[in-house]
Length: 137
Image: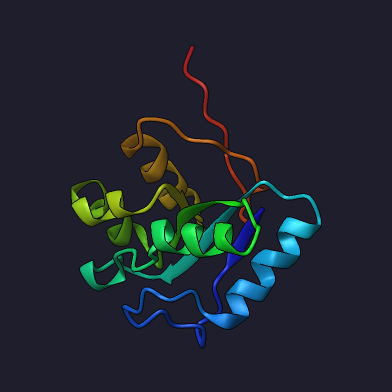
């Protein structure tokens, strides 16, 4: 399960599990989910201040204390505005603060850059732009 944190739900560096998030996670657990990825969405260029501030270890402990055994992961979804936003991604050490990384490409150029610069890529969603396949024989 992927859970996007609303912008108004800020952790503000606090290690306590926000009440709205706790209620949602308990509901997911009751529905049978075993793992939930808490997602932060960044539009445009990724900056160091976007580093993961989720205290997953403490939050997992807090959930277990009330009988919830969900595994929590952190996920970053970057929606680059243009190809320049993709060029600096591999050099960002702060990206490693997230367990999962997703890039939502809005153009073929951005999609090609992401594919060229990543070790592996999983295309699981339909592309939102026309893609021209070019084959060299």
